Structures are given as structure tokens and as C-alpha cells.
Length: 331
Ligand code: KG4
Ligand code: ZN
Image 1: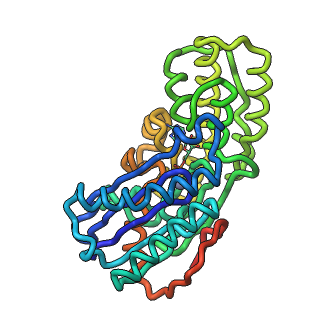
Image 2: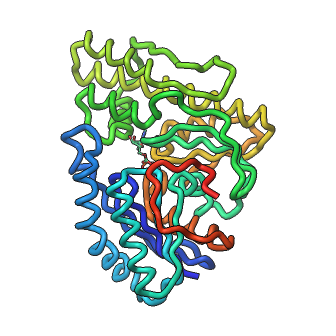
């Protein structure tokens, strides 16, 4: 079965073809970061318009680049939430039009669920149960994934997501958008730092997170500091470590307490190289830590196509709606 995946929840237009027997055929992506960078965050109306302009040329590019005939698509999977209303509407209208024209089924996909299973696309050995840390621009939560449709959220951020705080502090430091990769790059420019920021809730005993206090604390320090290349990288260095310390400590503790061997880190922040290497170095020797292929950490159409394939095996009936704020348990 060949699945076309369509992702338009925020500022990335992602399209992909997935072959249930051979894996990913190919994917194409248009990231709008340049469009939004001068605002330091995503402007919803600009995002919707750009998805509308780019989506048809991107489908043409996908088909021609991978030499694929549109008539060979058997299923169209699209993100129906969570995300921004306008971008979601663009993707769902496009997906349903293609499905209707081809006479095939369309299937709505929860974006968070697609991130959670994204590591499995390139790790065929990986199966539930596993501990999942989802760290993106919109969400930060820890869950126990018992089965494909059986989740238990054990902790989540009480305020800002980790990605959002990376983006906001990068803006304060005069770095670009998205902030995660910028902070990370700046942090590698020094090995020492005089700054020591709080590690919020690291010893709270539960699995919840809170990053908004850290954001305010770092902002106050930035306001009192003369920003030079050196001080920006020193601030970035401890700020990145503060977030990573909390994420790593809580995730490894969850794996130990729930006695689950496999740990899967997904979402945009999982592209962070230091997070990847620290997880591998700090995990218990009996644990395995998995990440999506680097290109599938941030938003993409391949994870939507892949979950479309998994979901197509159930008899769930589709509805024609989008839902900008669905819960994780959409079934
Ligand atoms: O999953 P994603 O592409 O979109 C959402 O679903 O939100 O995540 C985007 C977030 C942004 O906040 C971005 O700053 C962060 O992922 N991010 C990173 C890195 N690459 C992207 N954060 C830290 N380090 C990175 N290398
Ligand atoms: Zn995402």
C-alpha cells in the first residue's frame, strides 16, 4: 500500500510517500522559518497563505523527484491537529480533494501521535512498550506507550514547552528563529560559563516540567548583561544544559520506575545533538534510547504517512473535521 502523508499543522509544509512494504519512498518539505524569523515566532495568517501557495508545487516536486504516478496512491493521511486552524484547514482540504479525485480513503492523523511513532520509521526493531519523551515547539510531555493505541501521559509541562523557551530565549539573545538550533550552535562556542541557571522541578519527584520560571530568570540575567559573542554563548551554554538536565533526568527516572527498557525521544527538540549524545551517555546500560532520523525530528510529512499506514489497519471511521486542539487519545 502506498500512502501520501500531508503535514501542515504549523510552519512546515511536508509531503511524503510511504510504501508499507519498502518504507519511505521520499519526502519534500518547505520550511517557512525565513518568513517568520523577523517576528521571532510563527504568524498564523502568513503561515496559512504560504501553505496554500506551496502545497501544489510541493506535490508536483514529490511526484517528479521520486518518479511516482499519483494514480498509484492508495491512501491519503493528513494532520488534523493539534496546530493552527488556517494551516490545518489548508492541509485537510487539499488531502480530501486528492483522496476524492483518486477515489481513495483519507485518514486524519494526530500530529503528536505521529511524532511519538516517528522513530519507528527507520528503526524496524522498535515496538511498544516504550517511554516516550515528546519535546517540540508546542508540547513537552512524558508518556508510557503500551501499545499503538494505548497511552498513559505520566507528566507534562505545566506552562511553556521546551522548544518554545528555546525560541524565546534565542530571540532575547538576538539569535535567529527557530531558536533551538541557534542556541545549540552558540552554546558549542564555549566550554566554560560563569552562569548557573535553575534546573526547574528536577527534584519534584513527579514527571511534570515547568520552563516559564527559567525563561524569566534567564531574561532577567540577559537584561543585566552586556551581550557580546562571548556572553551570548556562555548564556546559551548553561541555558541549554539546564533544559537538557531536567529532560534527561526525568525521562531516565521514568524508564527505571516503570521498568521499561526502551526510551524514545521525539519532536523538534530531539534534533538537538547534545541531547542525543547525553542521553546515550547517561542512560542505564540495560536501556536503549531511540531517536527519529535527524530529518524526521522536526515536522515532516513522512511521519504522517507512516502513522496513516499503522492506523489504516484499524476499522476506525473518519470524520471530515479538523481539530486544532485534540487530546492525544483521539480514538
Ligand atoms: O516538532 P517541531 O518541528 O514543531 C512542533 O510540533 O512544535 O518542533 C519545533 C521546535 C522549535 O521550538 C525549535 O526551536 C525546536 O523544535 N528545535 C530545537 C532544535 N531543532 C529544533 N531545539 C533544540 N535544539 C535543536 N537542535
Ligand atoms: Zn511537531
